[in-house]
Image (tube, rainbow, N blue to C red):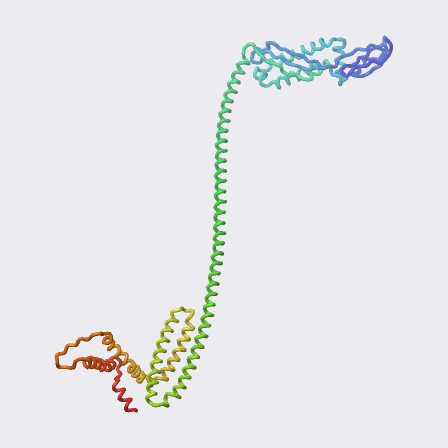
Amino acid sequence: MAAGFVTCGPNEALVISGCCYESPAIVPGGTAFVWPCIQQVQRINLNTMTLMIESPTVYTQQGVPISVTGIAQVKVQGQNMEMLRTACEQFLGKHENEIMHIARETLEGHQRAIMGQMTVEEIYKDRKKFSKQVFEVASSDLVNMGITVVSYTIKDINDDQGYLKALGMARTAQVKRDARIGEAEAKKDSQIKEAMAEEEQMAARYLNDTEIAKSQRDFELKKAIYDMEINSKKAESDMAYSLQAAKTRQRIKEEQMEVKVVERTQEIQVQEQEIQRREKELEATIRRPAQAEKYRLEKLAEANKNRIVMEAEAEAEAIRLKGEAEAFSVEAKAKAEAEQMAKKADAFKEYSHAAMVDMILETLPKIAAEVAAPLSQCKRVVMVSSGNGEVGANKLTGDILDIMGKVPDMVTQLTGISINSSLRATQTSV
């Protein structure tokens, strides 16, 4: 073999011994120069080894036999030179199976020892604690061999006496009981939550309906207020229109009344002027002529006065009934006509007695005509006489004259004026 370099992978370590080395040189995962014949090169495996650790029928602290199967991962430590040197001293030149056997036996012994210190319940229920104890105890021994325990865990626990099964049944029953209780509680909680949710839903629905009703009520109230305001404004507008129309009609009526008042005033002025003219005419034409003409004119004036008074009263009554709007014009007209009548009355005051006599004398022919009217309608008159009086036309004429002769007495009884006395006084004055 020629001298040269020797290499190894990262899962190996080179152990060089011989010339030039007081103690073997260890090169993990690297390259080394080797002189053949005077130096020797050996390799040690640094791969992780998986071990199945079986401990059948081990009596626990309670004396219950159980079997435990564990899985351990171990390897020769290549990063710590002291541990690597120790591993080389212990296992260099040995096959990997031999190294695995040594590590397995060591771990199995510690596993059995710890099983004897614990109860079945502890091992079964707290596997982490069991695994930790085995890992710690076995690691302290294997470190002295240069081997590191990477991991340890329990794979299986069983027994031939049915102890674990009984534990499982009790636990299963407990779990089932707890499951039923949990299911019942969950169902109860679910029903309670459903009831609460339904209650909240109903409350929300009622609240929503209430809000909708409130909104509807607010809308109706606002709409009613708006409608009331609109109707009020409309009524005010209609009333203002009606009031304005009434004011306009009233103003037109007042203007019409003012026109009528002006017309009446002008008529009154014309009548007053006519009265003044008649007074002057009467003054000029009545008092100077003969007494007979004077007497006749006085009677005509009195009759005219009565006619004017009656017309004035009728017209005043008609105007009064037209309403308050025509009150002013009626009052003015009444005052004017009253003044006119007063002036006429003053003008003809001293002639009232003669005027009445004149009117009565003018009426006597009409009375005689009315008395004789039935006779003018008769085609045939049959008269019966006892022979002591007049017969024929003399009789009819005499009866009519008798009736007419009684008229002055009747006038005197009704009016208090004696026609005969008046006639005699007139004849005497003439």
